[in-house]
Length: 335
Image (tube, rainbow, N blue to C red):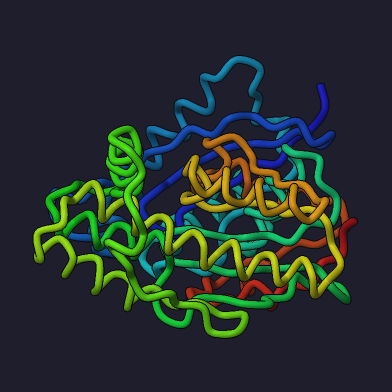
């Protein structure tokens, strides 16, 4: 049997371990998700959850059919960006496994991993990535050996915005799926008019902003507009800003493929809007399965595989986490 790369993801609420064969075959991750009883994610509480869950996940990986520890050729981990306490747990587990198995350690860029898992699963070659997650919203394209950020949020990530709106109205974390369900329920009653529930449109050149949309949406509910109607309008406005900036990136770069990545890419309405825009431009829209849109260990393993095959590894003394790591900080040596 061929070798594989093990990947450990721990940037935020999810501790996840997955693997990828050296031929690019993806193996589903085994994950443990920290769900706060109230409020948002507290980094230290999430880190404690990851620490308590690590041994259980490793045991489950060991018991998976076809998995053998002697097949592991490298251990990859999220080096950044993310929540510092959470990143440290994943990095510690990865260092221990690397030393124990006597295989290379590979610190990877979490944002770039979303691109590479999407390329692997969808087959797109040179896409513009619309990266929409809890902590990040970016439009990214590859140029001159790096993934360049062409536009990004000026305040909070779109997933964070949706979660904050949901939390304000008693919807538990993660809030995105329930907001989507309420928006769909609104449409089933007959599509409302955007004129009746206008929200700020946060496009600033190639960048976007969500705090104004959030504040206005909360106020609309306080003014008596039904929650489901505001959920519908919130999705329409927020997703339209993302798709507009993505279209500009396609026009600027001349690329024809749009790849969605990050947890919010699971949203069906966003997918339909992206697909329609790309069809109108003569291009194509792509997204991986939901399990590979959300944070997962397999995507870390896939980028680790790419780097390992290029001879890139991380010395233990260079394996400190970097919570502020940028997408464009990583040199791309692979095809």
